[in-house]
Amino acid sequence: MDYSEVIEFVKKTSSEKQGSDQYPFRNSYDHTMRVYRWAIRLQAKLGGDLDVIVLAALLHDVGHEDGRPDSEVSAEVAVEYLDSIGVAPELIVKVGEIIMMNADKDTDKDLSLECRIVMDADLLDDVGGIEIMRDAMVTAHDEESSYKRAYYRIKDYYRQSKPLIRCCKTETARTEYAKRMQLVEGFIYQLEKELF
Figure 1 (cartoon, rainbow, N blue to C red):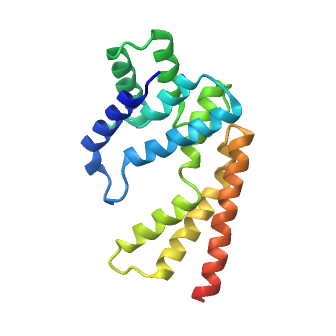
Figure 2: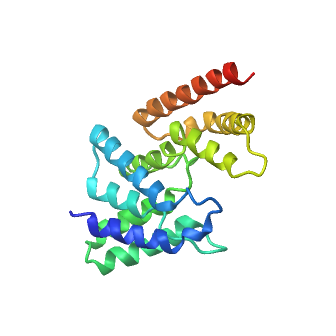
């Protein structure tokens, strides 16, 4: 399957909802493309239906509507879009189900391999080097920005993120998540030596 048309749809949809984040450097398209790349890496190691995984990863974040869960809106948008481009109904159902489940990272339900991969790919995009960059850039936008404020923000987010390893659905993602947490921990340690 050629995913370029889907990627263009995601890019267009993301640019339409771009104003929803207060930080200009954050956008759902970049996030989606990172999730897409992680999903492909995980699928290469774990298997699963590549089309289902890629479509769910690309479309997992395409919908937003005040007062409704993003996963619900995204699933509706994804199903409607995939139907409009002639994707097989059984594939559409699988993709829609994965998108609906994606926000429930703490679930202990028996999930398909494809669903576990997409959930893990989404989770991995929130930790590691990207986390450090985001926290530093958010702090730079504060009126009273400083290295110490960035340090405290990175350290706080690290504390919040570390226990979320429990949400990884595959051992491959758990291993990668642990590596990323070690990277952040090492960065915090080094920063402490340089700042204090």
